[in-house]
Each structure stands twice: as C-alpha cells, then as structure tokens.
Picture: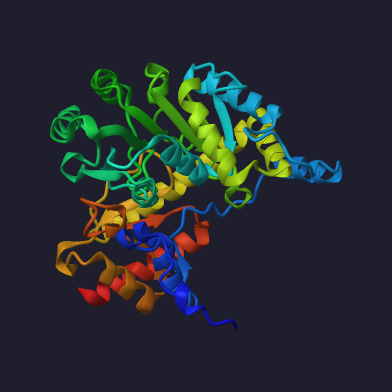
Length: 394
C-alpha cells in the first residue's frame, strides 16, 4: 500500500470542509454490520427490473451496441422521454435541444448546479429535503437556503416563499422542489401549485423540479410545475424508482433550450454519455412499460397503509404519505428528540435500520424516515421488532 507523498497530504477541495459525508449512506454503512438487520434505510425498490426492460438491455449488448452514444442521449430514448412528458405534463420538449439523458437523476442535479450556479448565488430548498441537494449547491460555490416547512404540515406555502424572497433578494437564483417528497411523502395538489405559480413567475426563479417519484403518487395524479411554468422549470426524473432500475443509473433533464445548453455542456464534461444498454432499457420502460410502475405503486400503497397504521398504534406521529415510498415519523415525546441516538439504539438492540430525520435539514429533528420499498415480510417483521423495542423502553 503506497504512502501518500507529504506534499499531497493536505490536497483536497476546501469546499468539502463545509459539508459532512453523505449522511444517509454514512448512517446506513454504520449499522450494516449489525447481525440480521432489516434495513428500511435506502430508497431501494425490492422488486426486480421488469423482464421486458431487462431484455432490451440484453439485446443492446448482443447487438454489439458498444460505441459512444451522442452525449445528450440516444435519440430513441429522448423521443420516449418526449412522448412520456407530453402525455403526463402536457409539455412538448424538443428532442434535439431540450432533453439530456444523464447518469441517474443525481448527475442531472449535478449538471444543473455546476452548469447554472455561480459563487454568491442562493438556492431555496424547502426542508426536510434530500440531503444531496445541500452538498451539490455548495460544491457549485452557491449557498443553500433551507426553508423549514415543519410548521406548515411539511409543505411550502405562498407566504413562506414570499418571506424568503424578500429576505434574500436578488441573490436567489433557483428553488429546488421535490414532489412527491423524500423524506415526507408530501406532494403538491393543483390548488397548492396554483397558489405558488404566480409568485414563482414574478420572481423569475429557476424551478428545479425533482420529480423522480412522480409515478408513485397514490391519491391523485401527479401535477408538475412545468405544466404551468415551462419557461422557468427544469424537470429532473428517471426510471430508478418507477421501474426498480436504481443500479442502471439512468435519469434525464428536460427544460427550455437556452437553459439546457449549459446543462448539456456540463453533462458532457462530467460523463460524456450514458451507456447504451441502459438507454435501451430506459426506452423500453417508457415506451412499453408504464403499467409496470402502476403495479409497483399498488404494492407500495398496501405497504404504506400497513406501516402507517402500525406506527400510529405505537405512538408515532405521522401523516399518510401521498407519494414516494417513505414514512416520516415523529418520535414519541417520552423517548426524546435525539433522532440519531434513537435510530442507532434501535439498530443495535432490535436489528431494524431507519434513517435519523436530522440528515434532511431544518425542521426534521426528532423524526425518523422509514422506507417501505422493502418486502412485505421484512416490513411486518420490522414492525414487530419496533413494537417490542417501544414496549421495553416504555
């Protein structure tokens, strides 16, 4: 094992000093060595990729489709994304200049942050929120501004948005809206979107609309800000959650051509292009596999109902998630508000893994997030263990 040269020992990007390691993965790794642990930690569907989607990837490999694809993505997939967004968002994106295929939605967000933000810019992020947003904004040299929504049922309100714009002024260039939300499961109704759109339109902000869970909305059809604000909105999405394709690493960004030019350029610097077999699978998923997501959603909804009822019975405070596959539960008052301590103790004593709420930013303290993208058997057993743990603590 080579020893690092003394001259290089302190060589690193000092922006990393302003952030912690990826919190969700770090905690998951910390508890992974617990024998027999059932992990309700990651947003990882327990289903397999639908067979016809998998076969599309295999056929691509067998056809020796092994050369560089166009940097913005294969035309077949960009056309499939166009058709899907036209059907579901009522917006027609040009396949040549307004859609970029990325190496997962995470790379989409990175290309947006690095391609569009500058030092001194501010980005509004309603919290609780996926912790990766904070890091990517900081790495772009910009400042994430957390908007704590815990007093408003975990939803951004028009008044809250107005106050934030007034306080931070012209430095605010963008807002990241994730709906259905990770970790809360909240999404926007049409009335809520209608109330926010005039404010966003007047502000001229870039709306970074993370819609990766859009096909997993339970009690209403998904509604996108892009439908009313196409000129200001970048849709970020992919097939990781809807088609259990997390390991395929496939996402996309769609938005106005003038903005997408910079996103496309940054994407080319980061990864050049996404591998062809994955793109073939993605095209098949969107062209012939939309019903696959419906089947997965039906299974998740049953799990949601079970886990919500079980946790409410144990004294946790939580709302029924409207989408995604997480519950965000407030720890009963008698057990304190140290969510890291609670989650670590739960893992060590009962071999059930959950994520401490604090990793999701302001307003998430004293909560835990549980993923129900796990098997029915594991969810039932984890609730049995949790009940036993709570009874002993009480």
